[in-house]
Picture 1: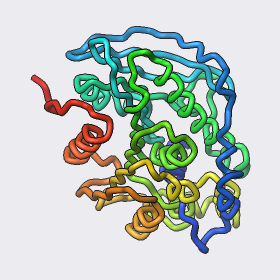
Picture 2 (picture 1 turned 90 degrees about the vertical axis):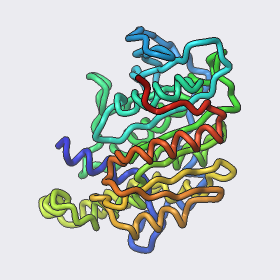
Picture 3 (picture 1 turned 30 degrees about the vertical axis):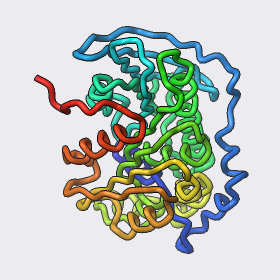
Length: 317
């Protein structure tokens, strides 16, 4: 089921308010936004384990308490010095782990930024492990996905509680599933100065129901008639399309792959059309992983301008 979880993770990056699906509950933005409320007074209960020093900073393995229960594992990357520092919250892609953004976070540490990279409920050990692949129980997966978002909001609390962080210089960077969360965060939590959304798909149905990926085609054939349509409908109120248009005044950088293997250009166009201004849209000659070095350079330049990071060489010797 790991591959299927990957597909779902990719699909949940964003969603399109389209007549092609019945996912209409999200049209009530105020109601939908309250799905991500939590007790801000709950103690963070941070536990910190030092991992290593590197040129420009240090890497830590930490946990903090989820408002939905249990510990959230995260990597915390801290620059050398006293600050005040900029801060970056990362949302990794669903088929990966919080390790995805360690190299990028080290770059930003050398540039004067603290980074936090939390995991998702499906990356955690038992008894806190929750995998969103209950296609016959979409309500359950919807709650798991809401928890992932709430845990990221709690990550913002953690960063802004640090005395070495400048609260006016906070950014979010999310890839795939992480872009889904960035769409919602940018609408419901205005503490960020900017958001970078990488490889966002327009809606759940673009992959579950319309993707021409061979694995997804085989998966659709294996499911009972109507089950995936119901799944897309039930989870529709947390589709990103209901939120990405409400990001303003937070500026958005949208990065897409010209050779995206999981959804088509039409999906990307729907996503970008829905996103609020100000925004910048860039495409790269790569696949869903967006491993074009230029994509990293562009994110870095964007953050230099928006949260006042220093511009340092990406590669050090």
